[in-house]
Amino acid sequence: MTNGINWRPNPENWRVSHFSETSSQPNYHSALEAGFSSLNAGRKTPAPAVINSMRITLAHIGTNRAKKDAFRSLVAGYLERCGAFARCESQAFATEAALLEWLDRIAGREHPVVVLLDSTGKQMTSEAFARWFGERRDRGAQRLVFGVGPADGWSATARARAESLLSLGQLTLPHSLAQLVMAEQIYRAFTILSGHPYHTGH
Image: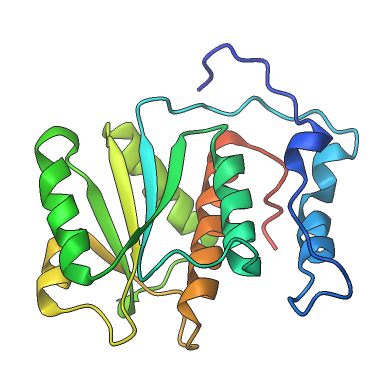
């Protein structure tokens, strides 16, 4: 599915903020750039199916971290790339109750599909996650909300509010890293659905 947009990656638009080698923060720039290197390798890139009516929210419980936080910069980078396909944003909530209240407020007009990251949730391959994503798109979902929960986990009330519980695996991850993994997988799902060369199946 296309909307007639002739989309060509611009190397300047695909560059991610990085850190000095002398910084106390880890330098993730080289690793991430390697992941995107195929985009400028001279191959023709299919135009993505831009989903103007869909909005993706990556929500987390906690405060917004400092601007120099390495994970936050990378999350923002992936969500910016997702902007070629849908409107994407990251939003912080002070408490689980605040997130649930926000979901109730937008429910009347947007009918959000809520997915909570939870250790008891279903594990998926990237391809299966992309199929799930595509099914919601084809059903006309207006907003997808992916929630990274509080340190002590989601309450029974929050779990009952979600359409799905999703597990990133049996390993325990810092929530900031879980946000990054989720942002990357959302972007990967879009590229799988559009036939973009980012996803190689490995």
